[in-house]
Amino acid sequence: MASDPTDTVEVVHVVVPAHDEAQLLPAALDSLTAALEHVRDATAGVTARLTVVLDACTDDSAQVCAGRDVDVVVTAAGNVGAARAAGTTRAAALAAADAVAPAATWIACTDGDSRVPVDWLTDQLAVARAGADVVLGRVEPDDTAAAAVVAAWHALHDDGRVGVHGAHLGFRLSAYDAAGGWAHLADREDLDLYRRLLATGARYGAATRPVLTSSRLQGRVSGGFAAFLATLDRPAP
Image 1 (cartoon, rainbow, N blue to C red):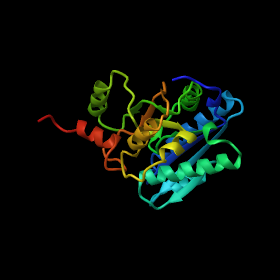
Image 2 (cartoon, one colour; image 1 turned 30 degrees about the vertical axis):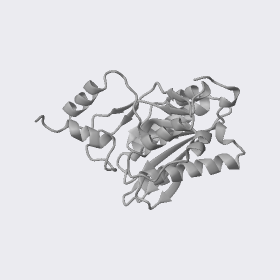
Image 3 (cartoon, helix red, strand yellow; image 1 turned 90 degrees about the vertical axis):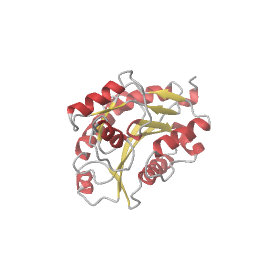
């Protein structure tokens, strides 16, 4: 991966889909607020924004966002791929209104049940400015689930591998456009986009800072992190 003078980033925009996440969303937004403040302080000339996509919510997620400085998009799709697409469309529109080119617009994705470290965005931007068009990072479970389940996950991932998770994914908007954007998939939308990004020539880089996500065993989609953790909660045959 070689950097280029055009690898500059002028806008970093966080997109968070949320479906009935009122219980966990406050902690997620607290962590994102800190990360946004940090990247603004640490990186001169960068605009940092956050959009939460409230997708088919029937709980108090809207009220959680109402008390904060958060841009909100409301959808009724009940589909995580569609929700991520709606948030990315909002980010692209705001960047275009500021006359910022897609190549200089960075989209950072996480989830409403996840907490990012304070240097999450500065870490992604460092990788982007070194030449990456798409960044993946490690996602680790919190202590919501039984200790044995969390321990089993760590035992399987003690090599420090980086998987494909929507909770820790970033990409340059120009690469996203070239790949055709988010597919409206109910799960594995992150893996689908990542594969298409690479297929269209996007340069990959790995983030160094992990994101902490809920270790609940029943998630908001049929597959994904929660579904995998649930398999670790089953007794051995």
